[in-house]
Amino acid sequence: MSAVVGRFAPTPSGKMHLGNVLCCLLAWLSARSKGGKVLLRVEDLDPERSGAEFERQIEDDLLWLRLNWDEGGLEAEEGRYCQSRRSDVYQRYFDILAQKGLVYPCFCSRAELHAADAPHLSDGRYFYPGTCRNLSEAEIAEKSKKRKPAWRVRVPEEVIGFTDYHYGPYTENLAQECGDFVIRRADGVFAYQLATAVDDGLMGVTEVVRGRDLIGSTARQIWLQKTLGLPSPEYGHIPLLTDVDGRRLSKRDGELDLERLRERWSAEEIIGMLATAAGILPEYQPVTAEELVPLFSWDKVAREDIRLPEMLRG
Ligand code: GLU
Image (tube, rainbow, N blue to C red):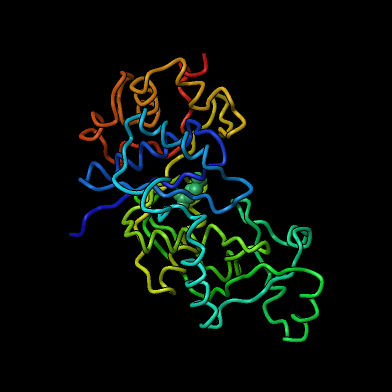
């Protein structure tokens, strides 16, 4: 059996919050409990949203939590693990899709895409109805004078399936449930779907553990990998962390960012609280992530959203 490689893939667009910590903890435990490696990829594709200072802070937080990684990070090998520095790689794979006749420019504005007749999918995405799919060369030339296009990939009538470690079998017919999706934005930035599918494939990642909010991206990423001749990892999506009222935590919940929490709690206390809330520890006690390795198994992890431990609020 080939070696297990898990990954952390933070977007350095702000301080790390507890939801990110839970995700890194479970990704780390899933890989380490199989004797696997962990790599750290910096998902700083969007230059407007991301910053190296946030990434430095995230790396410092992960080390403080003793969630270590074996390769990657900001300083590794001249940015080989930073998406902002891998445009040439994404361009190569974009070109492969284009050569297969699968890429076309899309001139739809955000307002048009959000128009009332664009059906919204259950997870908040909208279905792209194919408005620009069959434009003629002349129409493309005309529209290009007014607006820079985004680039979409044509998806087939094909059911893509995978078995999630945690949520079981999942299938999606991309043509019916998603529609052609953007792989490069109008400002030239490659889209998350393309970058992440290519990187997971090229970096030898064998398992992706991430929030359940991303489960709807998985079929697109698997299809891209297949179409590009890249291997696909396995996937384990995890429940989201909500506050005590059941509301999803976000970067706006400033009191739950790690900088504040580090002033009040030790790493062992934070890991212990999250492990208890997630179902890995039957009863709260401060622990290191390392101590949880022999206790970890996917069937212990909660499937419902995980409520923030009361202790942390106080
Ligand atoms: N970079 C994404 C985030 O921070 C995670 C993407 C992924 O795990 O595929 O939310």
